[in-house]
Length: 256
Image (cartoon, rainbow, N blue to C red):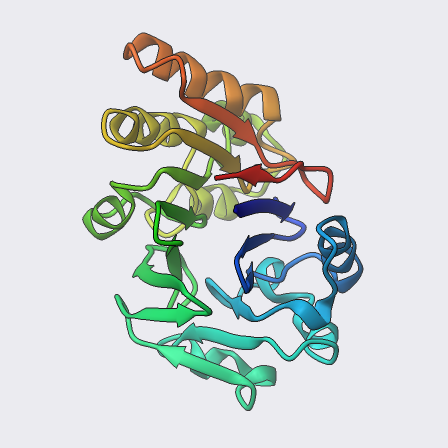
């Protein structure tokens, strides 16, 4: 059985656990080691049981736990070769891959794809357990043709729904930060996420996990309602499910 467990999601930290067979894979290592350790324990695992860690990019909310966590796990650490030069403290431990390359992680095929984010070498991932594809894509900037092609056949998608545009525009962030978030190298909005969900629901995607919600410029209810309403208006199959990844360690695992 394959399980997906959001560990942390949002501006304060991002991490997700994917387990299948002998593979215990952590995607991103934001938040802190204590949070990741507790999440592993809910699945009967420890840090020593992690087999692989795949990092999307080098922003702090995706790597903050690494400095402590790597002292307690033998997991193989992967990052794109384009991000390697910015992976200052972990270069001795890191393995690299080229854009579009697939890594065999204990029987799980992990393929990366480029994302348009303001962190050099930023990527997303598609993991295949031999039965179905799971896609992990946050910090998108916008949905490029490469991203769309990479995730088009995913059964389950962990997808950024970062902000409500009106909340962001009226909110307390300084102008330069609002412009960054709204730019082609920032984050996608609830509306953009919902539009993508409609397209993917017409193909193979059955589960959407909305992630990386802004604490200042979004709410779980707004994100959920935007995507659910868009799917309903498009006449999507009623069996399609939409979830919101909670901020920290309160998510039940999704079994595929």
